[in-house]
Image: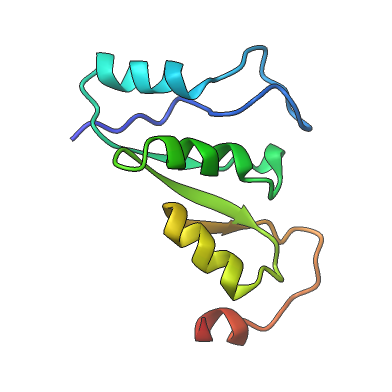
Amino acid sequence: MMVNWSWWSGRRSGRYVPDYDATLDAYLAQLDTHGVSHSVLVQPSFLGTDCSYMLDAMRRAPQQLRGVAVIERDCRIDTLTEMANAGIAGIRLNLIGHADQPLDRWVSA
């Protein structure tokens, strides 16, 4: 099994701006060049909860890509369901600077 952990996907926008665009076509070409058949994209914190670029990438390559999304603490269950249907396999929560919340809602989901 090969794991590619060194690629970011996105446009040059947000709080942190790499000096290049990382297009889906370039990423898929890299995977193909190195014989990697599947990949998991992880939404970086600097893009916040706007996962639209990653979701679009997964829609364009649904057999190859899955994702881990950054979501808001109050993300609705139907939004999570839509994300799961689009290929999201995991979530990240950025809780720094927020009051502690009971986990009951997340555990029951």
